[in-house]
Length: 209
Image (cartoon, rainbow, N blue to C red; front, side, top):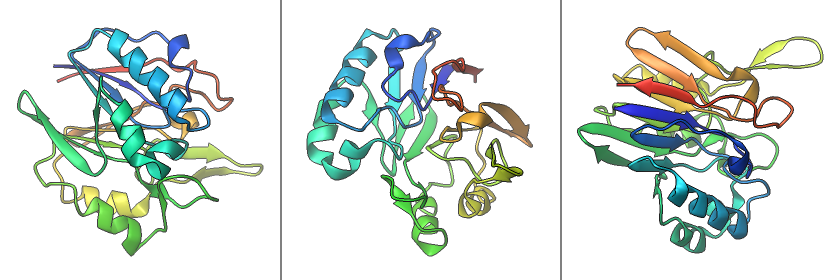
């Protein structure tokens, strides 16, 4: 099973090269300003991709999926949209969730602690592939401030991972963290397509299971 992972395309999906594979995973921030029109174009683009399965979750820029969920979800016809929900594909169990710790006033933000932890507690213990928009704390989550490098991932998600036996955890959100890291039996994938300058220059990450 070949997974092709992208994230943070910010409506620049037509500018990127996407390798062929079995499942195309988009880990959120698919839109630019978050409109229904952008989402409709993304869905049309999904229809043009050769992958047998496509999975989409939302990110903090994807406003219409938060504020107009019925209209927005109705536009997604060519991918499976997961919002705190799972899907079984050929024996692999996927779970998708859009939440990130609150940062200014973006979509799908929750405060650290019980509010966001409650979402992570919903992840089934038998999940094979977890898709979240943001990273767990300490894993491919570093940004450069004016004075130092800072880890900005979710501590509550990191704690919840201890009860799971994931094969892969796919996320994005932190553009500068693009890459892969293997920890024990889990491969962590920061699939951010846009770099720190919001240009879609980071390649898709391909994982074979």
